[in-house]
Amino acid sequence: MIQELKNNFGHLFEAELLQEINQVGTYKDVAEGVKMMEIGDYVRSMPLLISGAIKIFREDNNGDELLLYFLEKGDTCAMTLTCCLGQTKSEIRAIAETDATLIMVPVEKMEIWAGKYKSWRKFVFESYHNRLNEMFATIDSIAFLKMDERLVNYLKEKARISEGAIIYSTHQEIAYELHTSRVVISRLLKKLENLNKITLHRNHIVIKNI
Amino acid sequence: MIQELKNNFGHLFEAELLQEINQVGTYKDVAEGVKMMEIGDYVRSMPLLISGAIKIFREDNNGDELLLYFLEKGDTCAMTLTCCLGQTKSEIRAIAETDATLIMVPVEKMEIWAGKYKSWRKFVFESYHNRLNEMFATIDSIAFLKMDERLVNYLKEKARISEGAIIYSTHQEIAYELHTSRVVISRLLKKLENLNKITLHRNHIVIKNI
DNA sequence: AGTTCGCAGTAACATTGGTTACATTCGGCC
DNA sequence: GGCCGAATGTAACCAATGTTACTGCGAACT
Image 1 (cartoon, rainbow over the protein chains, first blue to last red):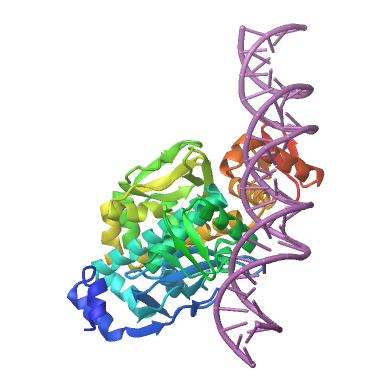
Image 2 (cartoon, protein in one colour; image 1 turned 180 degrees about the horizontal axis):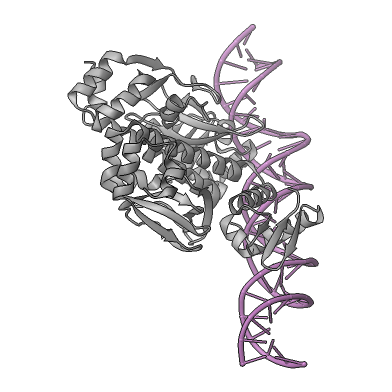
């Protein structure tokens, strides 16, 4: 039994299921920035996230993106769950936000375990629930907040994910993820700096007190 | 066996499951406009929608609303599914868009059937999948479209749901559901009328060719 | 018929955010 | 040091949307 599996999912799954996962699952390391799933892809295995973070995007007609949410350790990809069963295409793009480690589980097991293990059902249901809640949060943010508030939330989340007070992004990259323009982001960041909430540097931003 | 159950869910569930649903489920009629679930409510039973339509809302800090999507016959409420298991509160508000008929199933059965019936698992997974896709569509609409396009989509959807070319809403009601102001909606509707796509009347709108 | 009230039309203005254009600065590289 | 390209700063302008304020209309009621 690989230790990471036990550490991350041991409290969720019974020993027998852990054994099965260990047997049929394959480990996979993904480097920061690597595209893990593209819109339109068919999905053939289900990822359990052991470490790192993955960002999930939606795309508009011009090919521009919008960040929906992050997946973290202990999470799984909700798209995968039903894409497997329903044979439908992915509606989203997944990119590694940091270096990440996954266990890939063959899709056939998903449905079998759902019949066999209560803990697996619980995990799957909770995954959906979490994803739905994240979508609600995303919708709240887009529909109810102005860009300056969205930016602050983004910076907070980004800092939390990277476990530090420094965000290594350019203004252009932030603009892509929030689906706006670089000029707008630069403008708002400068305001935050003037409010003494952050300090701006070339290629990175230091969070002070937001 | 009540006929509507068979008509709407007969192709999804095996006979034995249909029997169980019929035995433990209770029928419920809901009149148009009735609030069926409020944000913060705990959920104790799961609705299967037999006829009619239900609209699902999210609320901002000021108590203003945003329409997320509609549920129609054959659908179930995704919130319910995990609220039951996880004992969490509802994140959304549900209001009957039209008169509607439901079967209410006790929550305990949900998890039992998930272990017992493959068809039930399929139904639950597909429900989640559909809801997630509707959330994606909602996000696309809010994030990528301008208000005039959102309004057109709204009118189309509303006409589809009510199965007719007349929408019985005031401008104010439309504004609430799209989370904007009455003046903005009046302005855009007038434009659509000038384009000969709709005709405006007091308390209702006739769709011509949008 | 007159009153009332909710609904709709519209002008004028404010604000937010998107766009264009250009200047400046920083690092890396020769 | 000098050059170059990417990143950032900033002004000026524009389009979309939100806000305020007022008018007029129509249905229902008395």
